[in-house]
Length: 263
Image (cartoon, rainbow, N blue to C red; front, side, top):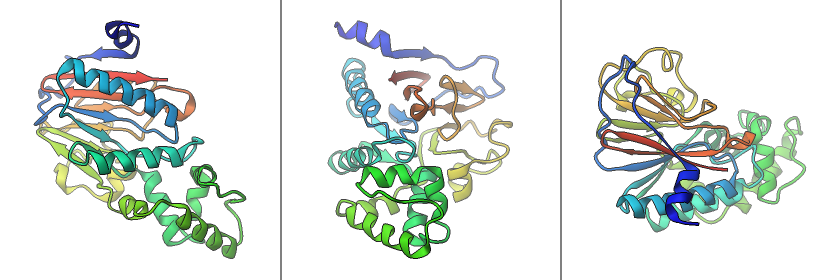
């Protein structure tokens, strides 16, 4: 199939909403691709990465950053594959790949730190599927504490070398020009570099209600939308890949945001 036809099937173009109260022009330092919540959908991830490679070549964006917005694991069946792919990407082209922490990665780390306490919540929100993707079965949310400790030990042993250190070091946010990336939200009343961990991972009550007044754009996931959306300085790209929706990437450059999608 010709490249132009392939791109037309998987790419949609969206311009900034002229009616928005937020009117700053997108101005990242360099173009970047922001990829939404993957949640164990390794097949969609590979399709989207192929589309990004084609787009890079056709648009001259070979040096554009890949910004993964968090929530790589849980709910989907191939979380281990996704983590291995992103870890490899971050090690081989580390200057062009940024992986942010999502609330699901944070819950995984809480499980490892306190499997019988705080970490039990992870099993309820998809951790069981992630454990299964690493070959660890039999986990259940209300298992006895000693069983959870054993499962945690098995999980740590199953993780590839250095992956746990990589997960712990994932940044909470990323900034380029007047664009910021965060998994869940930014508090519109605080500077991009002055956000709390809770806001960045779990959201903020004012994020969807009040536009920022500093001209800073925020690309985010966490909150599922039917279609990728641009409104009041927010670019929402979690289109529910684990719910049979497409996995979305926003292609952001000066004055422009468009979307690539894979199913």
